[in-house]
Amino acid sequence: MRQPGPWRRGERGWYIKIDGVQIKLKVANDATEKQARQAWRELQDERRHGVVRPERPTLFELLALFTAQLDEGTKKYRDYAAIVGSFIAYVGEDREAESLSEFDMKNWLDSKVTWSDTSKAKAVVHVNGVLNWAAGKTRRSKTPKPAVPYIDRNPLRDYVGPRRAVRLFDLTPDIAERFFAAALPKFALFCRVLYATGMRPSELAAANREDAGEDGRTIVVDKGKVDAANRIVHVPAEAVEIVKAARAEATAKGPLFTNDRGIREGSSVDRWNECSWGQAGRRTRQKARIAAGATVYSIRHAAITRMLEAGMTPLAVATQTATSLRMLDEVYAKRRGSQVRQQIGKLDRPAEAAGARPKVARKAKDQDVTA
Image (cartoon, rainbow, N blue to C red; front, top):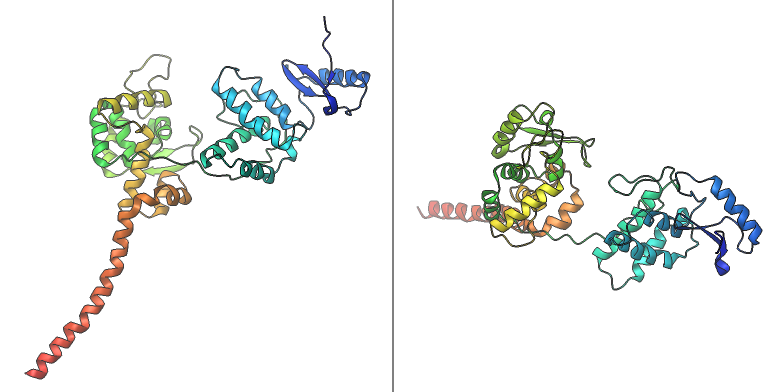
C-alpha cells in the first residue's frame, strides 16, 4: 500500500494532498524527496481547523480550497470549476493570486470572443467570488469563510467588467392591477407598497415596526438588517394608509409586513423572504394569467419607470430607490421615450409663441393705418 506523502508533478514541483486538496509545497522544483518531506512536515504544523493555509497561494490552490467545501454534484461546483478553471488555464497554475491584475482579467475576457457580455459579467463574479472568499470579505456567500484569510486582499476587487444584460418585464399599470387583484391579501399589500415606493423586496421584508413613521409617510432602510444603503424611503399618498395599518398591527419589534402563512411560535416564518415572496409571486402570476417573466422584483422596475415618466428627476429617483444614475440611463432610458417627447415639446412651444407675436402686432398696425 502506497504511503501518503509528497509527489513530483514534473517541472511544476512537489505537491501534497491533504483533506482532498492538492497543495504545492514551498520548495524548489528540483528539490529532493527528503526536502519535500521536510516541507510537508512544516505544513502539517501550520494546519488550522483541518485546512492548510498556503503561503503566497496560487489561484489554483485557492480554487481547490474553495471547491473542496462544495458538493461536486451541484451546479455551483461545476460553474466555479469551469469558469475559474478557464481563467487559471489562461494565467497559469503557478500564478500567485495576489499578483493577478485587472490587465489579466481584461485580456482573458477579450479572448472569449464567443461569450456574451452577460457570460463575461458572470465570469467576473465567479473569479471575484473565490478571491473575496479567500480574503474573508464575502458577506452573502453560504460557503464558510476560512478561519484565517488566505490572502490580504482581492487584487481584482475594483475591476469593472461588462455589465449583465438586464431584461425587464414590462409591468404596465393595468397588468400591475391584475397582479394585485389576484394576490392574497397580505401579499397584495406588500406588493402595493413596493409599487409605490420602488423599494427592493428584501428591503421591505427586513423592515420592522420601528422603521416606519407613525404617519406612514417614511420607512427607514437599515443596512444592518439588509444588504442595502442606509436611507429614508418616502411613501407616496397611495400607500400611506397601508403602511399606517401595517404598523398598527405589527408587534413591537416584529416585521412591518407579514406573509400569508401565519405566525408560528419561535419561528420567523411570518416574515417575508425570497422563498415565500417568490412562491407567492409565481402563484399570483399564474392565477392572473400574466406571461412568464413577471417576478416580484419586476414591481420595483415598474415603480422606477413610473417615477421617471411622472417627471421625477433621475437624481431624486436614484435617492429614493438606492440605484445609480448610470443604471437609470442604461436600463430605463428606452422606457422614458414619452417623457423625452414631452420635454422636447416644451422647447417647441416657446418658439411657436415667439413666432406668433410679430404676426399679431403686424395685423394690428395695418388695421390702424387703414383706419
